[in-house]
Length: 199
Image (cartoon, rainbow, N blue to C red; front, side, top):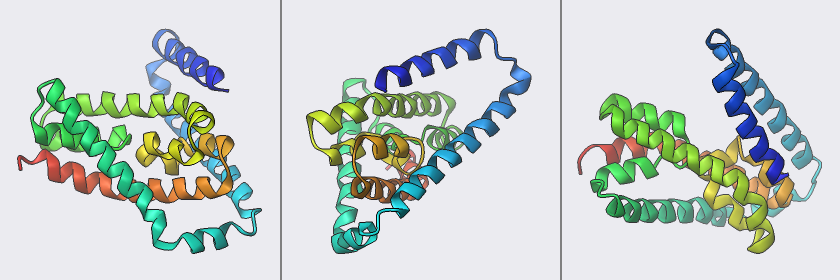
């Protein structure tokens, strides 16, 4: 599955670069959006069939928020270290990391309110995070623990990486991943806007 995913991405890049006409770019965006909604609909049906799932989630209670909290702390700490290594100012590295994998939104916020160079870096950094997550999910699920697959996905665990998490883990982890994605997605515009202003 992992190999097929990466082959699909590479094949898509080649087709997009060499063969796909620019005039159809809006069509592919629409197609991707519909495809993602169909995938999420399928995940929802599968979760709905698990009668005990909501009860399990209710039993977890507020503890379910520990996962996004941990992802936030880990991401920001990693951003500080990476920023130090490549000599980025603290506010820039924290703003880039606060995209949590949501490359389109974080890049737009930074580009509009700060500058194009850091916006582009935010785009590439968060895009690479999502691509790495696609490859890491099945590996982490087998080698570590199922819940470890949530951290690399960041905000994407509520949409693009959710079907992969559902396939590699179990319904309870899938629901926790969805909650994690919702929390982080809500925080992206707040934290990115906050950090990109010089503290």
